[in-house]
Image (cartoon, rainbow, N blue to C red; front, side, top):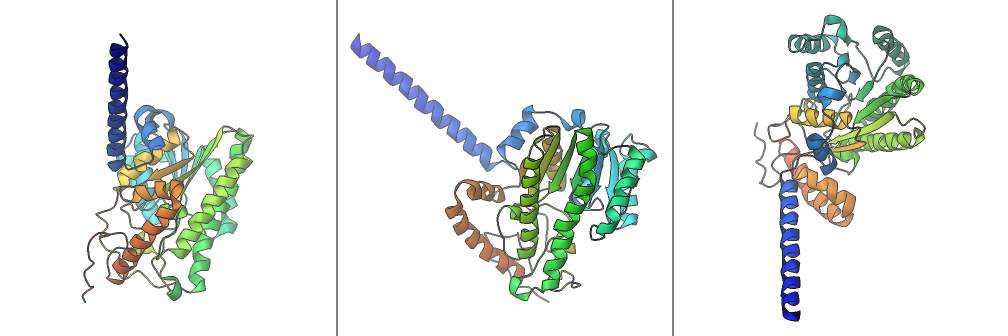
Length: 345
């Protein structure tokens, strides 16, 4: 009898070990093919659907004329959200509006084109008043406006650093401060800010951009703690990795008015539509921080969170590659594991 009990105990132990091994393998495979943090992917599978939670909501999108902001407009319009589209270029905003109307059931009155310069902070109060007068309320503010950077610190002028902080950080804070009192008076609302993977960790060629995104992370993480008396207000930060968009074409360089000479191929990056779908899932489920990236970039989020010593080593290795890509005339985030070809004239 004792022998039978021992055999049974061994069988149960073996089953537990096998079950644990299978579970770990499944989770490893999930991570290898993941393109977002597990909380966000769980929400995408089992949480609230954007179609249910965002329909009819008034959503103000800054930086809506291209890239992530443009795709946000299209997907939100398809869901039936009412939109305020803001950026500097009114003609591009009108183009985005036309496309939204063509591919949704929205009417002309459901989309407000509201040209906005984040640097003109004196105008933000009047712009917010215009938005409120048109719709009566703002349910969601998506801070997506800003510019990235492609230049080495030793070559970059202080004017560029000042411009980056004025645009990416202070411009975003200014708009948020105009909208937030409206949300606190109603006791409800979402402020979502598009940060970046470099808002969590540094990266070469983006010292100023990374600093502006770190500033946004610190600001909104602190703001979230100030609003604990308003449980109906969600402060969400979105941290995408490389995404297919025009952001590199409009990047700051070492001089304030110097354009990027070669933006490189963007095809290796995450499709914009997938990134935006995950953002909308996060908004529908009130996710406070979203990590969105394909591998190997997603791995860096976890390394920086849980294994910073290893993260520093990996960042130095791939950071060196990023600089090599840049100097070779490639996109900085491409060809990490292959030798860059020398730029030809």
